[in-house]
Length: 212
Image (cartoon, helix red, strand yellow):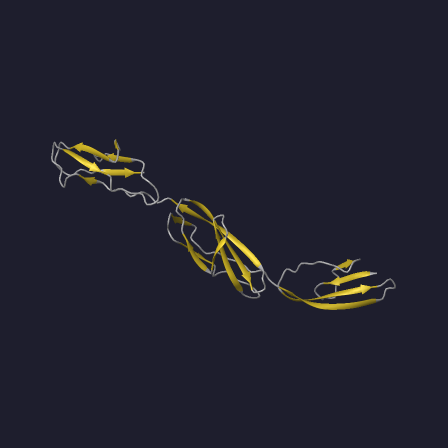
């Protein structure tokens, strides 16, 4: 006596059990006819068939830039997500380690600090099945902007000229170092947000400011 299970109605017994319970996993979506045959102690049999609708999991897909600058808008797009046997009815986004607080097939994010941030998309299909996909976005520091100003429109031979870097700025931080090459030799031999120099010969001079 016992139970004989044919999970896909191909005429072959897939499992025998002594209890009226069995489990199986279907690899593909679609309808399946499952048959159980009951055998009593005398060898007599009886069978019953039922139809099972196997629902496929939705397949989330994230399309986004993998790198961006601080405070730069980054688009998150889930339009490549599919549900093989239905439709996706809900898109939810988790940015960083917080909660799923953004919805919609598309959204945008930005990050104030340079770091690597996880992004997770959670999709739900019309049968209530949920699946997630994750990626990371690396946020890079914006380079500071160097601006050098002269105290006069034209320097005079033998007279001291002041150079200022006060107009330099850093959009996502602060400038901590100023370096000056005042003679164009490629060597930065003066420091500070301002400096002075005296030129003993007339002509053009290349002045370079480097900030970090």
